[in-house]
Image (cartoon, rainbow, N blue to C red; front, side, top):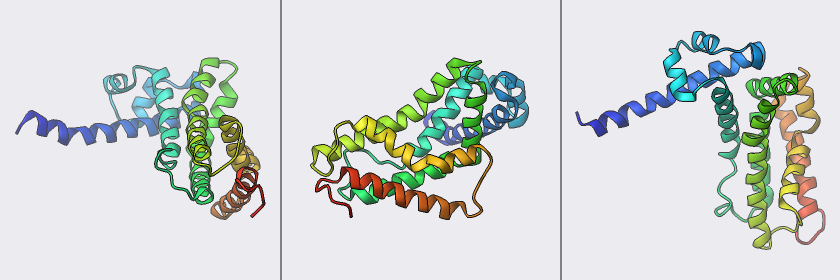
Length: 214
C-alpha cells in the first residue's frame, strides 16, 4: 500500500478523534470551569492519551480556542460565501438566523457562554479568545455578505458591521438570555421559528431598498 493511500485512509480517523476530544473537552470545561478543567480530565473523558491531546491542541488554552472555533464554524457553514449568496435576501437572512439559533441554543454552546460569564473576569484572555474566534468572526462574515448585497443594490445600509451585530442581537434576544438562565421553551423549534420570523422581517424592513415594509 502506498504512503499516499495510507494518509488518505487515516486522515478521517484523525479528524474524528479530534472532534471526539473537542466534545469531551467542552463537557469538562462546562462542568469544572476553566480554572478547574485539566488535560487529565479531558484525557479521561475522551479516552485519549495526553500525547494525542497535546499534539492536536498544544495545551488547555489551545483546546479552549479550538472548541470556540469549531462551534463558530458550525454557524459560518450555513452562511455561504458572500460572492455566491443569491439575490433572495429575505430567504438568506432567515436561513442564517435559524442556523445561528440552532447552534447558540445547543446545550454545549449555552454551557460555553455560561463559562465565559462565570470565568471571564478571572481569565480575561479567555473572553478575548471567545470573542475573537466566535462572535467577532460571525459578525464579520455576515457584514461581508451585507456589503456584497449593498454593492449589488439589494439593500441599503451605512455600516454593514454594525448591522450584522444588530441582526444577531435581534435574532437571539430574550430567547438566548432565558436559555442562559436555564429557561428553555418546551417547543424550542417553534420558539426559534417565531423569533426568526419576527426579527428577520423587522431587520429586512430596515434595509430594503424601497424602504417600505413588506
